[in-house]
Length: 324
Image 1 (tube, rainbow, N blue to C red):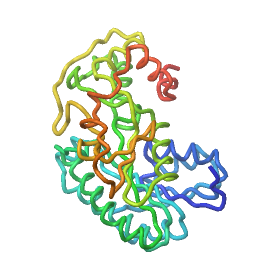
Image 2 (image 1 turned 90 degrees about the horizontal axis):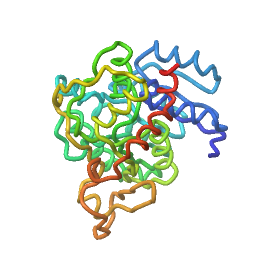
Image 3 (image 1 turned 30 degrees about the vertical axis):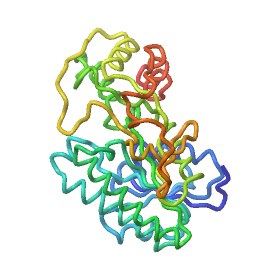
């Protein structure tokens, strides 16, 4: 990827996705990576960890349009990852999710259009499809805002598109770090429902998806990764096997706002989805008729065998570090 003389802005850049994207981009000839977030400590940690002059840090909040202006100025591309994404937190504080996930994302898009950015990729989630929780509802409205603004963006020569992904393995706040913490504390692994299914996507794959959307997206497009899945019970068994632990499991019941299965594309979107081998592309103004099946869910995608899941978990840098 030739990114010479290019500047990329990542909102919410101190999170799991931001760190994974920075690692990838620093291997290219990119001129500058701008990290925009609220957390000065995490920014300082990143500054020390990467120790690369191509990184620039901006403290601000997507809720505040003025704080975006300096970071957006002279940026070429934007990856918008700032969000409130913890389902229970959004359930208890839905208006906070509205402020960040809808209004904050709208501020990012407006600032990008005003600043002459050429490409913007908005990161969304499976929970935006048939949303049953506040997090999903706010992300669904963010997507609708993106689709509406993509028309104006197209007239300005700006590509505004989006991605959706499901469970990102070992990301902050996800179940794998929780399981590791519980195993090391000698506590049983807490399982909401052993038959609950989740897409299994390593962080590197999430980065691949965003970069694919960046390289191939047209205005209003939404891209999803064609990913395998596993049940939470199977994942718990693999974690206990990897760490040679006998702590066992404890079923605690589904948390507020959780789904039994993840859905990345609904059946209406599947009528116009284009199969790109590893990805589905859903064009904003596609013509229905290319029926590829029903909803695309973690229940009807490829189910990982025990060995496949074991190998996938073992390949994670987070697990390799945790085993030391």
